[in-house]
Amino acid sequence: MNSNQSNAGVLLRLILIELKEYFRNVQAAFWTFLYPMAIVFFLMLAFGGGTVDGGIGGLSYGSYLICGMLAVNIMSMGFFGFGIPFMEARNRGAFKMYHVFPVWKFSYISSFVLSRVLVVVLFSLVFVAANNLIYGLGLDLTVHKMFKLSVVVGFSALAFISMTFLLVSFMSKTATATAVLNIVFYPMMIFSDLFIPEESMMEQLAWINQVSPLSLTAVSFREIVINDVTLASQFNLFMTLAAIAIVCMLISLKSFQYRR
Image 1 (cartoon, one colour):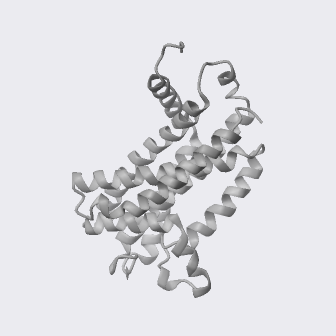
Image 2: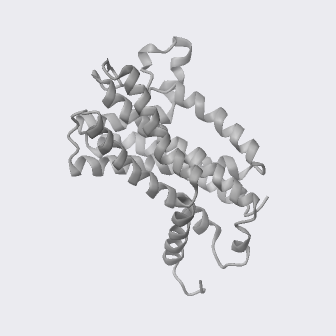
Image 3: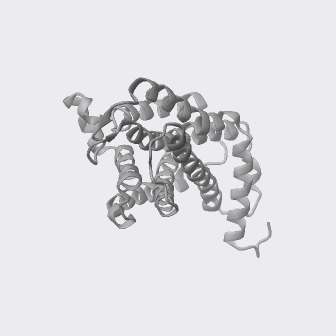
C-alpha cells in the first residue's frame, strides 16, 4: 500500500482481507450461521402454534420469533463471532504488522467492523427467507421489503459490532472478554422482547425490554416484515443506533491498541 493510494482503496482491501479471515474461523461461522437456526428449530418445536403481541399487535409466534432471532443473531455475531476471535488474533500477535504499514487506525477498525456488517446483512436475508420457507410463515418477502430489512439490519449490526469493539479494546485477556460479553449478552437477550413475549415477563424485569436497543431493533424488524412500514418511520431507531455506533467508534479509536 503506497502513500498515493486513496483511503477508500485501502479500506476496500482491508475489508476483503477481513472477510477472508472471518470465513476461515469455525467459531465465528458457528455463531453466525448454525446457532440461530438451531435455536429457531427448538423454539418452534415448543411454541410454534401460538400468537403473541410482539410490539405491533397480534402475529404468529413463528413470525415473532424469526424477527427476534434476527436481532439476537446480530448481537451474538458481534459479541462472539467478532469479539472473541478478535481477542484471540490480537493476543497471538496477528495485528503487529499494522504497526509498520501506512494504515490509518480508523481504516483498520472500519474494515473490521464493515466486513462483519456485510456478513450479517447477507446472512439475515438468507435467514428470514429460509425460515419463511421451512416453517411456512406466509411472509410476503418482496425485493423492496428485503431491501428495507437489510438497511435496518446494517444499522443494527454497525451499532452492536461497534459496541463490541469498544468493550474488547479495553481488555487484554480473552477469558475476561468472554466473561464480560456474556454478562452483557444474556440479560439483554432474555429480558428483551425477542422470543419471550413482554406480556409473559415479571413486571420487575420488563423495564429492561423498554430500554433495550435489542428489543427496539426486533420490533422494527417485525414492523417491516409484517406491516411493510417505510424506512422513514424508523427514523428514531436509526438515530439511536447511529449514536451508539459513533460514540463507540470514537472511544475505540482512542483506546484501541494492535497488541496488549
